[in-house]
Amino acid sequence: MSGLSFNVSIWGTGAGSVQLERSYDGVLFLPVTEAAQICAWTAPASESWKEDQVGVFYRLNNTVYTSGTFNYLISQ
Image (cartoon, rainbow, N blue to C red; front, side, top):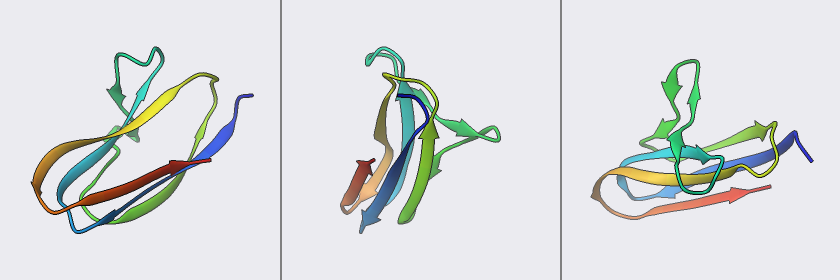
């Protein structure tokens, strides 16, 4: 079924950057962009997203790590 909503939440004591990435084959992941900005967070956040296609993979990638712990949840 297309048009499914999902949530992304990030929290913890981590210092660095975490970005949302998408893949259509489960191998090649690309940064998700919205209004030409990469969806990356450097502080706790919680957002809702909607995917219009079936079989798309998402992951959070810790692109910059300085210290601490990042906690995350991707859920429907």
